[in-house]
Length: 293
Image 1: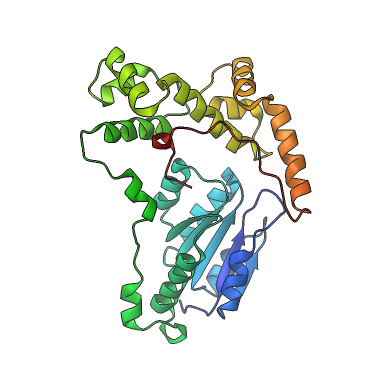
Image 2: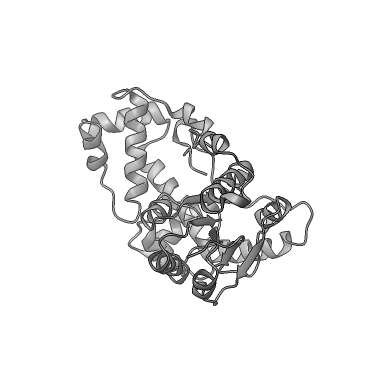
């Protein structure tokens, strides 16, 4: 199939607002855009006029939106797909790359890198329209993020052990996590592990685990289509009333009120020049801050 000179934007937003900064950046660079709106099937565009690339844009990825990306990739495997999302998690990124997306961007993202990726796609898919030479294409590199230097560790040292535990928690946040499991990852007994975690992290293992669960719950509650009960179970609580009590202890309000105030705040902020910051949890010690956006 002949590649056509345009980029397809596939909107799969749950809410109506659209962050179109990268649309404008692409247009400013001379790229032509076509848009597929929520509820529309991108297949006719992909089949009749295969684009250089298709950008699947999400605010809060849901089952229908993600299924659309996966089905599109299966039907048109040769067309590169970029996934652009406001809501991010490690599980979502892993899913995206298993679905064989070309690249994955979390808003707000590095516009320079995004445009470099698009230029490279043009160089590969439509060389006659590309602004890059062969040498330029080679020099568009996938650089290691600068913040990764903050997390460089020597295998076996305390920070390496801590990062191993944090990764384990993120991958298993949806279920009950027993402290002895985390201790086993470090080659320590439960008592030794408890002292180790407190010494290195500055808080207890259970305090960090609850903090992480509530932080993820706050992220999920921003999606109005996810019920509070589903949020409760997704972040590893088995009892809704207990989840509500813990959430209120950390955030200062129950989940239902937090969601309502966030929705009202989002509506107000869209009209304000200087929006107020959202409710946040107490800050974690530096070693426990995730390098992920």
